[in-house]
Image (cartoon, rainbow, N blue to C red):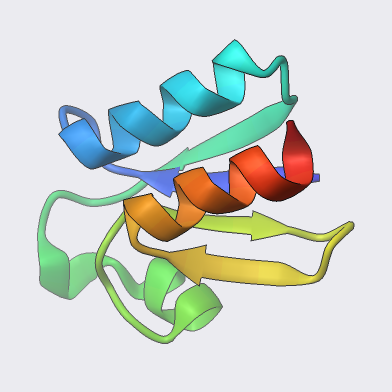
Length: 78
């Protein structure tokens, strides 16, 4: 299962959403709090509070930074 932690209106999150959708990858989105200091679930999962963050249980991957995520989608999920 792929999970995307995202913030509504975040262009980096939208790029990841678009890549997942373009490749037909099933995923769940968890919408995060706009306040950086309130993103405790993101911090628990990834060790930091910025988004986007993606987790992929099948590949044992948790990663941040949209460019890294987009590369992972192309290499491993597409």
